[in-house]
Image (tube, rainbow, N blue to C red; front, side, top):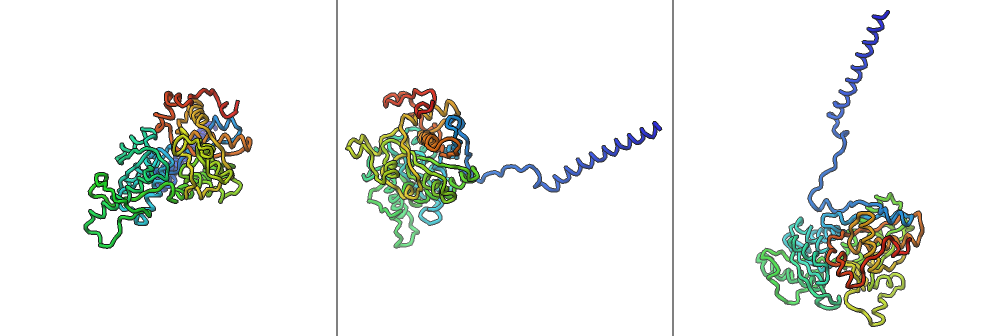
Length: 424
């Protein structure tokens, strides 16, 4: 009987080996014949434009743990141009090209404190366009250096009221008209009677700036980020839906500061249309009138009411946020309230996040995080709050992260935790 048992055991062993071989062969054959079943590789992006948007939404651990809320930040600093403004730049340029207001070879002009200009300078070449930027000379110097390094031309001008003809935004508007006038005179093939001297409702004032434009210039287009609703649409159609999808619709509040107002307007309107119970808030820096507008319906600051305003346009170390008028973009916002933030809170928050989370954020991002904590304190633990991490601290080294500069303003950070927001 032993030989029979041995033969049976051998047969079982052979059978098992054959079975295993067949399974392995089937597995590899199936993978070869059905490549779709292979592990999916991430599809490559088609150029820099496709890399914009769909940024990660991360849990800010330190703030979440301290407040008992889930505080989430949308990492817009991971866009190719380094900020949330990449979305706006793409939307503005694509809509302008589609409408015929901008042509390939044309110059996109903008008045910007930095981030929008950097984004336009980043993406314009992908559309065959150039960029001309007018920037206030009190903006961090590294911003204009980045813009120039990207191949754009930069004009630095003194900060004045938006009502002044030489406000940086108004100069940018004129430059677009001058580019059209220049192109008109050099476009011999253009049919007679075509008025190429008007753009965005603004005509050239007659100044000659031919040295600013190359001979092959195909005209100019003023991006007009404050009043161009393409700004709002970039966030209503992009940022807002992304936040909704990334949270599976499970969020209780959204907060952001406003400069042009496009981000807070587009995101708040989209989210509240999806779920009216989502509360949306503004966080406003010193000197800005939007807090009063949202909470009291009146656009003025205490300093303005008492005639004590120190400078234009507003008194804050933060850049790119705060304003004293309602833009067309901000008018689209759906807000349930507003909070005030201080420069000291923004400075302390930025250092806290670097130390505890490794997040190196710009001034507006820090202010947004101040707003997120304020909301958490207001509505209590157990809620999910989303904010925008607009850009990194790399563009703020000469001012917001400059110890000597902060010391001169009495803004030297001293906190060891979140005590500057009343959290022990």
